[in-house]
Image 1 (cartoon, rainbow, N blue to C red):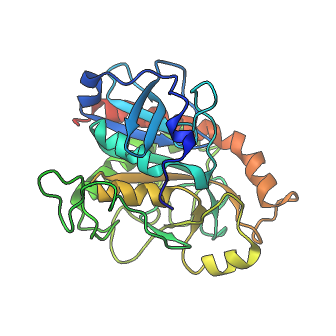
Image 2 (image 1 turned 120 degrees about the vertical axis):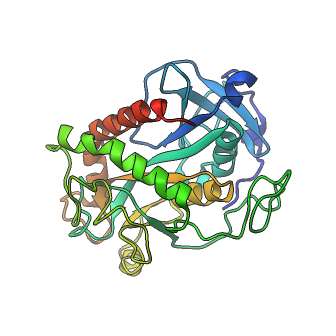
Length: 316
């Protein structure tokens, strides 16, 4: 759902200083992390958007070309103006994507924690790069009505467009960035092969994609987004299995808004648990997620480091 300007976005004042204008204007790339991604301490900044502040903004490299935000720790403030946890249904996606666009981020690579809807195809412990997404409960996710938006292509003064087909093979900028990310992340597989389970159709040549890098009408891996914050029921999962391969609560919203603003968005997903009704873990899907979260953090950390090294060298 579209984020509202509630009291928690108006006060208190963000603890982090505003990002300097010269740094904000510098061309850069963005990495969005989630609950399983942490980065080392460093200077933190904030940025005020029409949708509320984004704080806890940091850079992953010395050249300040790779900006990082944690979706759960950057839009909600505690009483001291510091970041506090926002559950999936409360993450201010509009503010995050708007801020990254305003900070001159050319492309976004996001890392998400997901459950598997197809354990035999996408097992727990695997890492995948979805090539499509679906909302379980479709609701409008758009900047329309809040920003000046174009229809099919943005014109002067317009932030983006609202009529577009996301995640298609004719979006060459997205396809190229996706291929770049795959190539740069491929070495992580050999470095951490003892911690990574291969999905069906994955090879060392295409990992973390499934089957191939090609984006066409044959969807290889679909990310399905549910509203959260609860896990899904067994009956819901039975229906969702007809629609997607993995399930999460955040990334389709980011993907949609980034696409509206014409920012290529590539998603990397760590599979932490089998969905409700599919898990064979003795403690069920929630305990499986908690148990696996620590183990997969080593891999997600390696992914972030590999992305940082590659994006620092890429021309923005």
